[in-house]
Length: 324
Image (cartoon, rainbow, N blue to C red; front, side):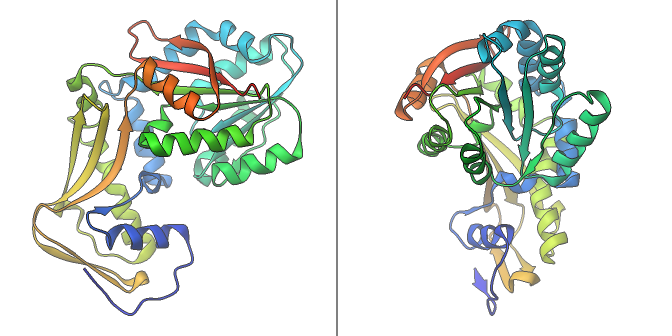
């Protein structure tokens, strides 16, 4: 790769795109899939027959609602329900309705890097459940969590659904959990989804649907570069490719250049050269078993209290606490 005269890069998007596309091998973060278009594409993915994750976690919420809420606040002393990566809140609404019905004392604080997602969820909840105190937060998780920790000693229940932790390899997952540990007071709870290991073909199908919605979602990072950084990626010259290693439980998504080509990203003063069949690594989707989750949690100073599973054991939500 050759770069033109470099300019000062101010946004996280600019910095990380420049770093990723000048590295070898090339990479881009999956967090940049999400804008207004990406949010809509992910809604479509969650409705796909191949994408079992959302349905499995939704089943857990519908089947175990009362037990989950009891585990959050058995004595009804009150708590803040903080959701990282809230998205459209579809699954969470099952809990919110029951929290209202059973007259729990709680505030709901959805956090997401997508302003579009947070604004849409807050507006929607005001219409559907106006009695809930909703305080949407836009930004990076730990900056906001650190602020919340110092603002109040009120009990926190932090939710990370959709197996979002699966976007991290184990070493970074431990770092993520340790940051959550530092953001929690003793007695606070973490409610976190972990997609379980299963038939490898089922995993591959979930990230490579026949209709091409997942491919469009993956390519949206290139579309964003074109739109926001004045790039000239030809999306048709890249293909979506998915792999899954059943030994490690790691699914990986790539964008693969179909031919030798050069892409200009004018706002970065950057030229990016691709060889034919060269890849950009865009996403990790880690799969787990109980032993792996136990190891990750204990390495982070936390401990598992309880687990909730769908009937097929495709997916589990783990209730985790900070004891000291």
